[in-house]
Length: 89
Image (tube, rainbow, N blue to C red; front, side, top):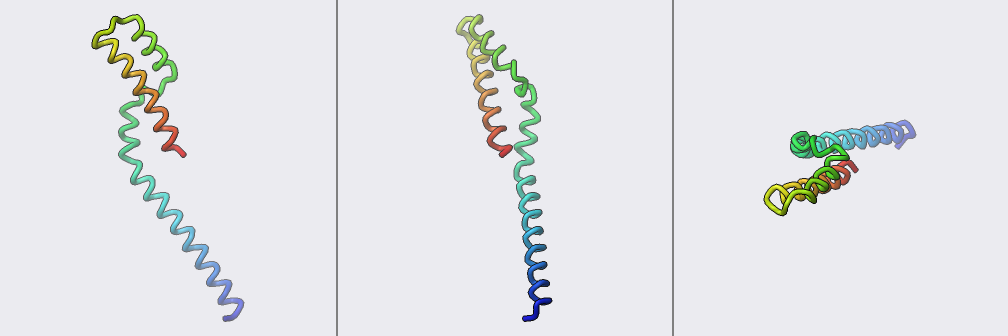
């Protein structure tokens, strides 16, 4: 095998690697698309003060349905932030 053939083979392997990287990136974007759509629906939960406000409100509201709803909202916000952080890596 001549040096030119080796160089050509090396370039083809580099191009194949790049093509695979692009393919995997597109596949990842396609798989994460439904999660991003779901995340758009929870955009309200992204504000940092919302969980603190919900937690404070749940302390003042008697232990009824509204108090439980507020506590669950604070938990949902915390879970959402963790999932978002994990998926962004």
